[in-house]
Image (cartoon, rainbow, N blue to C red; front, side, top):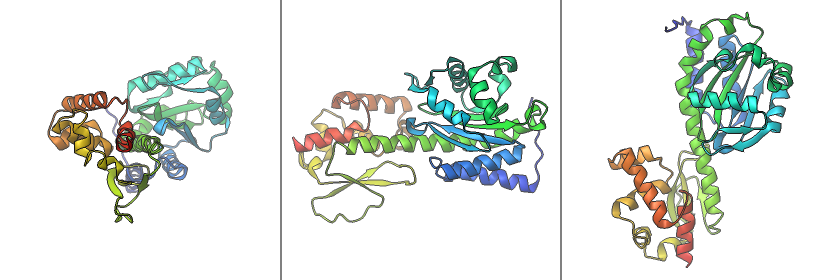
Length: 319
């Protein structure tokens, strides 16, 4: 059964502003996230809230009106990620809640959908973290990331709080969920691209990242299009030209590894940080074919990740 939510013009404007912010602001930075969290808490009538994210595999915590106990507790029990991207914690009960929520996909969840209240109150995470921090009754919004999740959790005063018991909170947050999901997934992709770029350039001491395609100062310097990273829609990678010089140009280098013309096209897009679905669209091939090309490219080059393409070319150019 769907919920009908009636909004004033002011409330509509607030929701629109937060949808826009989720799609345009730096979600890897604390202040923009806190601003969105606070605005949403006010419109749904929550007393407090926190954001917990794992962009690029890095645990981050932003709170508004919440005590320090949850952040401290998470730092103590966080152990990393398992093979499929679930958060691994030394608290098995909290780990199970997180795993179940992530497997459910993006959505808005009242705490009762994840665990019975009587059992919640008996857990270590509730007694040692959530209760002393003021998060007694919780409704959350979450989206799975490649590793972990992005979570906005909102706290209410009691089990009779209208924001906690009624359907209005769920209905309001559902209006924001598409932007929340898209915004944090894009932020996660950029964080992953930044990490991969940093790792790759660590093996290329003569290369550097530029934020605009300026004319190279040195004649032998070459510019390559790079991926979108946090705060930057386009990057450029400046190299000393050795990559292409080793076999005249990039395509010849790739051909020397037995790559086909189509695989070279796919590889060039991979080097720009373009995801497989977008590669499929640009080259007018199926997502399955794009993914198989990517797997074949990495197998032929003897690498395990996209970022290693750059380091492989660097070694080839200096060999």
